[in-house]
Length: 132
Image 1 (tube, one colour):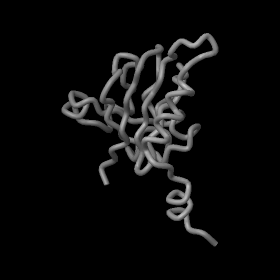
Image 2 (cartoon, one colour):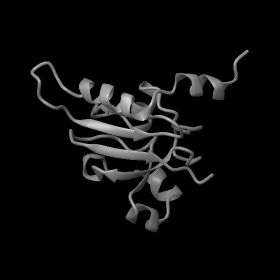
Image 3 (cartoon, one colour):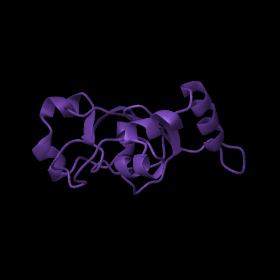
Image 4 (cartoon, one colour):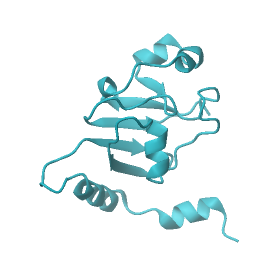
């Protein structure tokens, strides 16, 4: 039986190779660039096509990015992430985020991945940064 770490390690591609493949996918059939989200998990980084209405965590799970999470309700904060670019393309923070995150964290661009819903197309860059 192979442990989970070994599966992730064996599946991991060089970052440059992954980025090039993901950038090719970020072009629609007409050849124009589409809105993307760059996700950085614990060991995997991917650029994915943005889907409004989905959370950052849903994007990460759909594209097999190793994003930490446990509850999906905004109480555990394992999905905490820093939105480096594209904060304006996300819905306003939820009550769960206001209860869990400090005002200083919002100022630094932190959100809960399970609560941060994409509202409009654009470029978003997010990095999973859990407390522990």
